[in-house]
Length: 197
View (tube, one colour):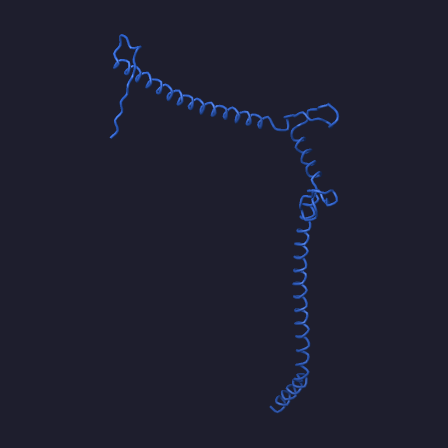
């Protein structure tokens, strides 16, 4: 157990007792703490509500801007890098110009990697994507056409061979069985049987 001795020199206490002074001091400290906590809570609540209101104002502005059609919005655009002449153009036109500039300025090699040296630059982004898209599409369609043509040719050849074999076999069987002579002999026998009756 620890024992502390506190010695205070209280010259300034004149009329009030120590108990009253301590009581007043504790109460004022508690009041200060409570006021600070309340202030912090109120400030946090005000901050949160202000943020919500700001978000609502921004959302309503964006919604209003979209309602007024983006094409109607105009932004300043400097015609060239050297002059100071500025004109107002629709935002859709500006976006189109920037997109076209991006597609034409950025250069890629034949594998689609961005190049750092001008000697390696072969294609713009749009050329690269068009080339790859056409290559994939054409190779896919050509291979499909080749497969269907091969399948059709095989089916045609098989049917032609089948028909040719049927014709040749039927002629060969008829000749080997000598069916015309059999028919003739059957007719002769039939006429003999009719004559004998």
